[in-house]
Image 1 (cartoon, helix red, strand yellow):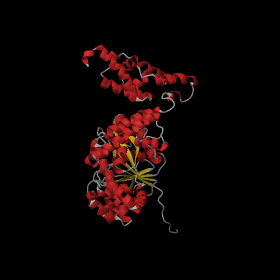
Image 2 (tube, one colour):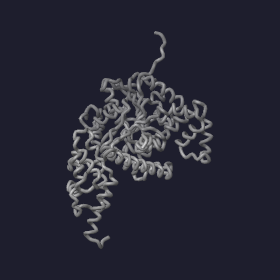
Image 3 (spheres, chains in turn blue, red):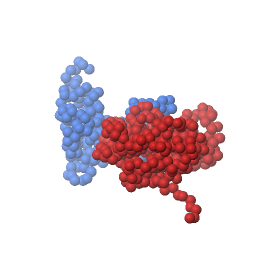
Image 4 (spheres, helix red, strand yellow):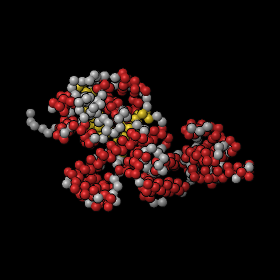
Length: 188
Length: 312
């Protein structure tokens, strides 16, 4: 993607160029909340901030978010950020393997460990029970909440590690749903 | 002595925001104290007409000398400066009873502004009090640094939008008038429906597009219209993030750049300090609030912004 276009998308998400994935995600979520009308900052303007304008901005930030995710995906390696200081030159092959693998619990754990992030840190930052995070990584599906809540946790977990939340949710939930169907096929 | 034109060296800060009870006077007294501690010579002006209590924040009882003497007896502003217990900081007390904002005449207002600019201080900080009266907005507009204080509540946000929108409107009107374009703007505004114009931003955009010379003038004059946002009494990270969200909305709604310069966390020490009638920044220096005031002032001076929590 041309640099100017990229800058436009960063501007739309009110970020400096080359902001990390985590910032892209967080900024998108915050702006989306505002312009979906779910924050107290827009309510006082009422009709002065028209529905049409609000929806247009919403479309723009969604476009910017998707384009920037895409751009990050095109980077040499999606997990390259884990090795940016080049201290692990031999890790390339392993990183590439992690890149291609679907986001299962064990893959997520490996990526997290590569990044040198402790589960307790994520637990503290995201205010999530440590146990829940362990269940996610160990794929103890019976210990996990309903998909609708699990999605939120996965999104935050992925964003914290700088991973593409859309892909993490999609790929992880596929396994979760398969397990659920196996458990009680009639429930569908 | 030869006659010289005095070049204004000091800087005027104005603290407003629309809603009452958001902590404007606390912030005015605290940033004043911090600037004084840093060696600046500071004069605080209490323009909270009808509800003046800045003197209380320095343990001073209602002073004999106040703005009442300026408005009713024609006293000169520099004669109304009262010393505080702190060496670098003095204040001009506001009027408590007899005056109301809309009793001030146009002539008095101009004289007041002239004399504020001539005050002998490196930093003059004006506490504007509540409300969006046009006299209050005009005082806001003479400042070199325009600060708005609000708390994370929907009414405070609403009043602040109103305050900034009307300040901008007055600034635009004044600019157009100075350059002789007032009639054009008024003509279009009166027929705004047929022009498809809904608000002041769209009027400005229309003027800029249709008359390039007006666009040049407005761009030039509005470049200085930069508002510093101070979020007071925040209780968590979500409150802190509101500042960034307000900034986003103001840009998209009015095209006004907001500098999110600081936040002050909610703390009972502030309430205690007000009751003790002593400068907060001297007695509660170890609190997070005091540090946040310092960061706020440094951000305003350096044009920096709040570092948002949680990797935003």
